[in-house]
Image (cartoon, rainbow, N blue to C red):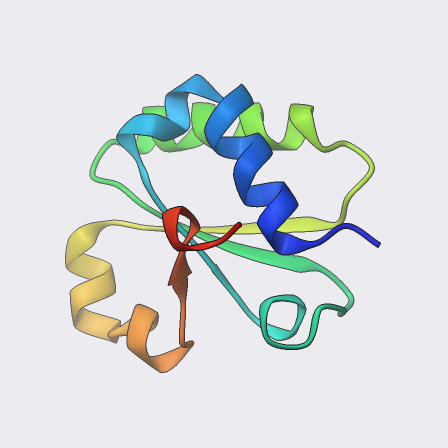
Length: 94
C-alpha cells in the first residue's frame, strides 16, 4: 500500500507545476491509510494551470485511484472546504 506521505514527497519532487499550487490531502485515505481513492484538493485561480497540475499528477501516478478536486480561492473561502474536510497541506505530509 502506498502511504500518503510517499505520494506527497513524489508530487513535490517530480511534478514541477505543483510548486506554484496549494495542494491538500483529505478523505479516508488520509485519515485511515486506506480507502477507495486518494483525495487531493488543488486551490488555484488559474484554471488552465490547475488542469496542467492535474495532468502532471495523474501521469505520475497512473496506477493509483487519485481524485483531484479543484477550487478557486474564492470557492474554498465560500465553502470552507479545507476546514470542513480536515484537509492537510502536502507540505505537512511525509
